[in-house]
Length: 143
Image (cartoon, rainbow, N blue to C red; front, side):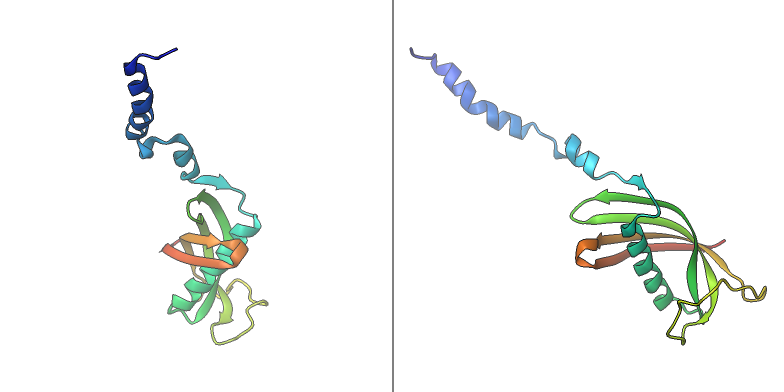
């Protein structure tokens, strides 16, 4: 039972041709894992990412007061080498100054001269199971 020589050659070159013809950009599994999906804004990972993003926002802000989240508008996630989140929020100035160490009792600023609302989009990379968060980008505009 001998096979024709061309069949053996064909069977040897087929795997190489398939690999060379694969376009990684069109790999359906990769594409599916790398698209942002809307997720529940109340998930614990979203809350952790938002806590971290707000901590960074307040640290970088030159405002004398701490800002806090008034409303979470949307949260999206995608899987890459980590979990990536885009979180859209409305934040407001609180009645707590940055110098106070306890912001648990902060409330929304009610003094009309000091009221301020800002719309922000935070892009956070996270490995929440390791407690690792990185604020990649933030875009904020006065509302």
